[in-house]
Length: 231
Image (cartoon, rainbow, N blue to C red; front, side):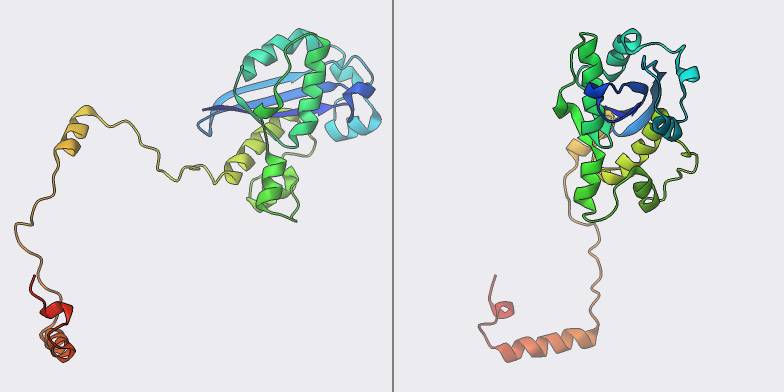
């Protein structure tokens, strides 16, 4: 099962009020294990970077002006996430809103909302009433996020991948119950196995005193006691 842990950074909060994506970061998981494949792209938002956004992301107009616009990287991004891989996102509604706005503006297929796995909602269900920010979940799961001095899409995706694995039960979410393929020779031996009597019966673990006490107890129960019935 392929999943993509994804994060975006933007100039603000509302794409239809002029805000744009300035960075995308993504990490590939296969069967809940990072494969080492990542996607990372800075994007020219074709507008000035608000002061508050610069303070959060550390990305200024000078840095972004020579980066490609979204239209130039849209197909590469689509190819990386694939057609049906689940997208693991913290506060998925926000990122999906921006991604689909950007894809729509360049006439690319939109991403179905049911592809998103929202780790924010997962955390709120699992720990009701507790803080569910990415930093709070890192503290809860003892995940090192000391390098997260500014918001960065790829770093946040890498950290979120660790958080996601903890939310689904750690790095072995199926508790080791997955059946691996068995070599043919081993499978044949397993198929041929049948239970057989022990060559030497196990010795009784009852002491003589315990056996005598049990016999005396059964005798008191009378002839109808189950131990006195013929088999």
